Length: 72
Image (cartoon, rainbow, N blue to C red; front, side, top):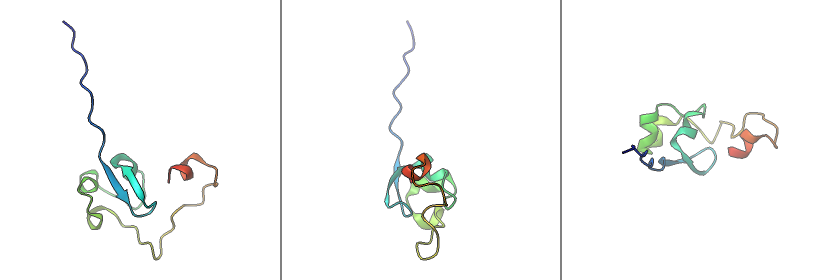
């Protein structure tokens, strides 16, 4: 008898205020404005997101055709 790996549940998605779309939690961890994986899971932006749309840039100077910019 062999152990078959169990399917992993899909990763939670949380709305990103910077890119204005739903992103997997691990993508938020790559954002310079987000902090704390457990806080991101809550979806309560005041707990994990320091992005201020009035003063913070959406992109960080990457070329427009770069993969990173395409992903947000």
